[in-house]
Amino acid sequence: MPMAADDIIRLIKQGIPGAEVEIQDLAGDGDHYAATVISSAFAGKSKIQQHQMVYGALGDRMGGVLHALKLTTMAQRP
Image 1: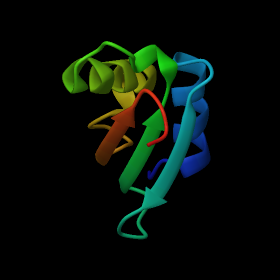
Image 2: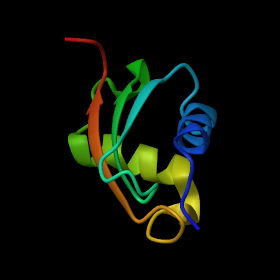
Image 3: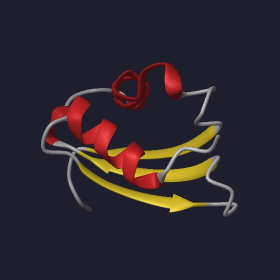
Image 4: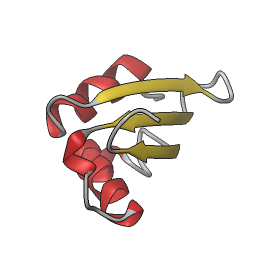
């Protein structure tokens, strides 16, 4: 069963309070998304650490109900 974009946004915002999250459904199937996550919590962290924070917020849904997620993370808007 696909995961709704609103659920992804909610989980990321719960796991990373204050984060701005934008989601795009890449294939129209609810399984392949692109997410842009902006959070001051990412300041001073490597891209790998930033992505781990997002994956941590999503928990075991990655690779399960959420098949693919292309991530763009940043500490502040460019």
